[in-house]
Length: 307
Ligand code: CP
Image (cartoon, rainbow, N blue to C red; front, side):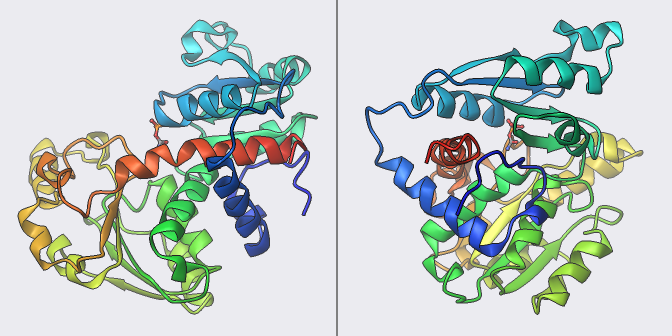
């Protein structure tokens, strides 16, 4: 399978075979030592929004493969501050770099960049739309925990929190359509999963069931995928204070979980996972974030034609 020169914009652009190929290459990256297939290649990182994991794990991945990195993490330090358009920024950086990783607040910005760029563009998150490399690392993490994901064993994945604007949720639900199973949703009123994602899952034979509370979801799932609630989504601060206490997993609540159940979170977390959960066997979000390195190594090496 040849992914050389491909843009990585939406999970919908990848077949089940593409996904499995990326996961296999990521596994191989874990054992890889002392060779530098991307020596002489340059990655440009254009982060128009804050990031810790996506930017730093892409940079770590590129450096580990012998490549080099340049870019900005704050658009205020770029000519965007002077009014330069995204299109012109891309027209310049595609002349400087061999691959571009971009995060942007606007839905569709990554697709626009890909249409203008002769070098591969990798979407590091666009608005509330997609975050495909997060999804590859989420699938990698789930498949390492539950190999039956790949063999069609039908996992139950619960999604909790901001399901309306959460781009990691949207990408992962689209990807799970390739693997079957069951989806449970828990969301505050107004932040429910948009109907098109529910329809997409159902069209692929996945059961989607909304439950009212985290306590309802915990005993039912193999994976609990938590997401952050953003205060600005709530016009009433009192409502936000109430909801944020309701959407909080604590270690005590997990006594009703299956022993093998694991909690994932794209991070950063704010209030939705209590610190006492970190010491339980259910906490898996830091390992999940660490998996970003081999997965992004695989993606960079594949789109640059080095594996
Ligand atoms: N998961 C994720 O996208 O984290 P960052 O916002 O820190 O990149």
